[in-house]
Image (cartoon, one colour):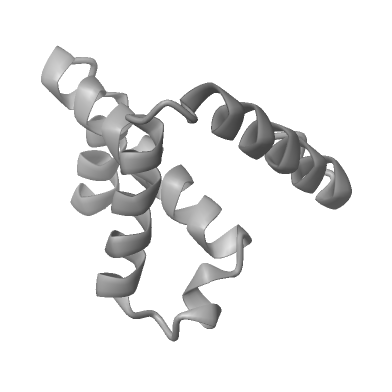
Length: 89
């Protein structure tokens, strides 16, 4: 019984640092879901070094002169993928 009360209190804790931590945790979980949704985990056999290298390549491209074109292309592809699976992004 005490455990349930503690869990409930933790869920409703409104201290700023706890709310911020929950928001950050949710964001990280959602981003991980996108990695999964894209099929990357299976394609690279969960090799995190490959995944980080790919993300670094994306970051480098976004710092270059092709930034706007890349964003437009990736946004279009992402929106189509969300529409196809019905999740709406």
